[in-house]
Image 1 (tube, rainbow, N blue to C red):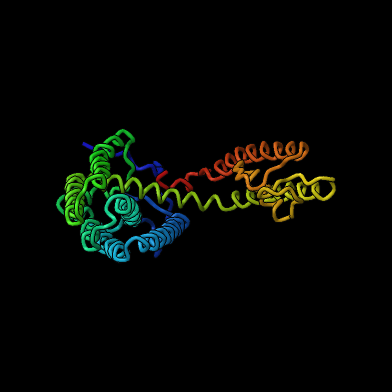
Image 2 (image 1 turned 45 degrees about the vertical axis):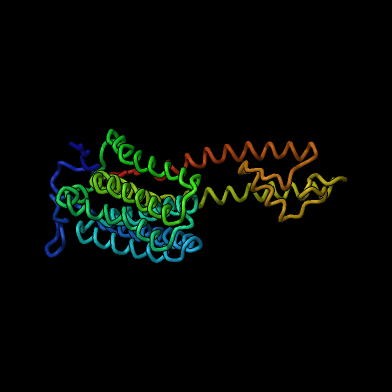
Length: 346
């Protein structure tokens, strides 16, 4: 039996404060109260998650259109139908719905990868049917075990990490079937045979999905709760992140200016730019400072004199230290400092 950890939201033993007549004193769930800031934070988190999900689906749809235009409409239609059906079966869990939507988007990317690699010649109708099969199987499995999944979805509780191995148990055969499809292009087969093999492979995956629909629902619930916690915590990151980026930008501008000034006052150019040794412009100095500070080093601009190389080394060390201390400060600032700030699943 799956073990579900208790809700991480704090519970106090003292009686709730008195509520003036005519005002709402609770949310009707065993006295657990979410203040106005908590409700507003949850609303903003859901809105941010919805916007990010819509952006992700839009990018995926545009990418899929270059492979098969029909899959774009199938993807968007599948998201609408499956997510709508799940919201009808299991109402009240907004972030579970967002997690399911993103899960379908990730599934679409994996599907297109295998389609481009091994089955790019099959007909659009077979592509669409094969794409929908696992989604329909998941919906059917969820409807078959609706009561069990409804209890899981409405619990809003994270499970212990010990059940993570069950995810691999149902993912392993799915990826195994996908790996076997790479043997298909090596065989001399006509398009109809390849299409039939593709439908057979997707039917096998759909059968597995139907059998483990409960585990997938639990996985999506955990992902949805962590998604919610991420957006609630990200609101506390805005101010420290802006301060960090401000200081980060100042360092980049400082070193970019030093590189440009050294090229102006030294006899020989200090950089080779796209194979030509010449003076550095200010824009190129800023660009080189960015890639050096981030330790990327594309190689299109590189120093050739000793003094500039020394300064590049100093900038690299400063960049690494700033990232370490900056991220530590940002995470420390984002940690909940009071009990009222801990109404998130993380």
